[in-house]
Length: 344
Ligand SMILES: [Zn+2]
Image 1 (cartoon, rainbow, N blue to C red):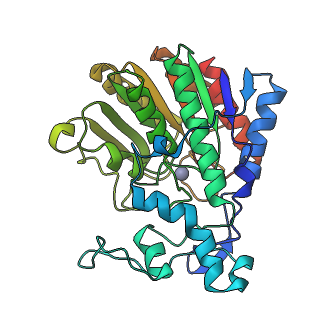
Image 2 (image 1 turned 90 degrees about the vertical axis):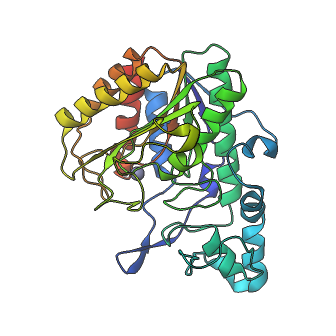
């Protein structure tokens, strides 16, 4: 197992997020990746490499140009509004819902923050762009390694990516690393790529990016969006559209779901991936299905993740793992590396 480690991940360190009506310390912290890295080293699980640098053009297969331009300049604009802003993160507070326009690019910074975001839980910080950009390089490096013949590669990075859409951030995500990896596999000539999202939360960004395409199959097992973030996508009746009809499959499960039911669902999702005829697999590896996760509701145990890894390996596909959520910080290293060790 090759691991591409985002050495710039700690540049993104949000201070506060809006949660249940108040600003609270961010759940998505640098220690998450530090614990996974330490556990990988402790178990001597494969080689750990820095990512290859990719040109910004590698992002355009997934994200819109106006969104990338905004992310690259957002912090400087924020501080230019008021030098005191350098001491606090930028959070959106207004959004262009439904009858409001999203085609216009307002000059006002707060308006653009809302245009390019979906929640107030995702602070944009001084180092967000550098961290997210290097994370994208990790995902692209992992995809190229797998396209080049590696059995598997792991993009160990944060901020996570699967909630980020073509032109918006949210859910702690800015650049959609899993989507970038899948697109890179396609660009390397692999005709049918599957994305399996096993984070507790539905990968709304990834689904939306590929929703009208038949070359990338998206399937996700997650907390029922009737009660769980991201609420507005991830239902079982979302099957794709246009050329993509039949190439999207969601498996929403109720809060409290344990490993037996979760694993049976995983087998169904893997059967769909086999039926699709996938030639490569991208796994959005979120660890917030763990029983001890502070913002999630499934009850998987640490030992279960070894079995998850074994089940994923049985799919027999070249596989890119991309690190997503998982907020039980002390256990996230053990749990993530259990999946990788089980896979190995
Ligand atoms: Zn999550």
